[in-house]
Image 1 (tube, rainbow, N blue to C red):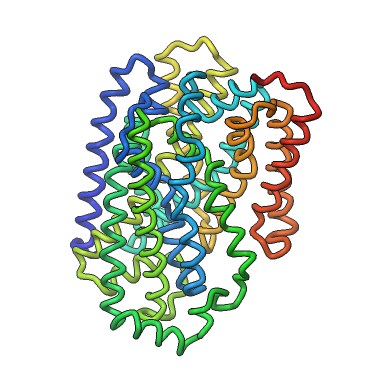
Image 2: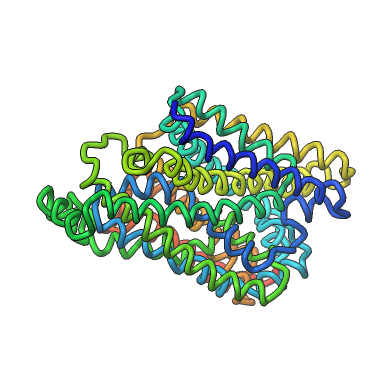
Length: 475
């Protein structure tokens, strides 16, 4: 156990807890508990909005799974990862003002609130909440595993003990501080992620003797590491292009990201967030995935891909600097977990409990149910994460694809197509979820594309056709 490495991580956790305690006073004093706890009273500024979007989207997949995949596939995975640069820009440009205006008009606190009001349908509401719960559990499990793997690598305790430490750390500040705690801590975590990325990629270049030398070593090992097809030539141009849907434009359909477009305070904040978010996510995605490729030349022979990033940091940096760099994936993981945890809790509490089980519940009752629900979700995910998958990036991408297949068209066409109605939305959501699960289980990567592509196309045509042949009573 290296205390020089651990101390920066402990300092980071203390700062996060202080932010949670600070945010808790807003939860206690707010006139609307639900608006504050699940949406931060719609008061996010441009910098905080950009950072919370980046930190929510940049997860264990970006900082552990992504570099691990880049270590295996080479520069082709860097090419694939850079698709994500446009994510924040695209989300805020597509959803932007219209989504925020309509969300305020409907007094929507969650994405399910928005869809329920837009389509005037309880079935849309229930399907939305159930989809969020199903797919985000797998996403949260991936983050829990990533956090535990990181603590395991750094501290040297068992995986189960690491998992317990991570779970407790996240649950405390989310339960007490709600969305505002998540947004504030995301801003801190976003800065740490950016700094950690820059330090690591610069150190990797120095340790490898320069980019030219690293590339020469990779070429000597396997020339395909430098090709756009991957080390085993399995990444075809069609497959890589299909990621424009999964981690590019399709991200509009991710509830944990789209809900951020409800939470900013004015148009100026949104415009600032677009600029800041695009620049920062570009640096992080390029830096972390390049570091994963460079690690193949610097420390060959790593057998567990998700440990590439911490192993590299501990190998090439002084202990104190490694601690700072390792705070970056911890920040990425915690910032994603807290958002997912709160989103699943909002689906259960706001969308199902308050919406259908007990619509007249008193505020004290809602507070108690919210706190306990968040805690129980954390415990459930902890139990699911005890037996982790080999490469967590695939668990995370499975969740992404499922959510996009369900939500992208009810959100986008709900905003911009007046003829879209509840029948189209329900049919699209069912078709998207059903076809995604079917293709994932039986025909993965059909026609050489990622599994998400065909379900997204199917759900689009189902939405349009069913809406056109049924009565429009959604508006």
